Length: 135
Image (tube, rainbow, N blue to C red; front, side, top):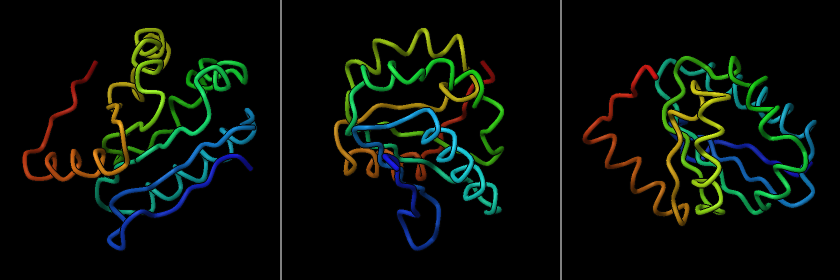
């Protein structure tokens, strides 16, 4: 499987998912189900760090936009921010289309250059919480 999912921290407040080359639509579906179960199993907010080692072109070729539409209801209510690492420029370029298809997911997304930057941003948000808009 071209996606791995695991707890990032001992407190289980962050899930780390890593997408690698060779990703398939099935990988995305299985990963999302696993991610949903992990997040929903906790009584507190759980943030997600998604590291992309695959390219946006690969994600597009396996139908990421179609997947986002179907996965929109598979976001646990206690999901916090989704920190995307890698392919930052391409991801930001495609975000307006993704927002139309899956606003419940994409309103949570932030882009970062590294996992360290994403963790730092989450720590800052913990100290100064950000309210997610209802858009």
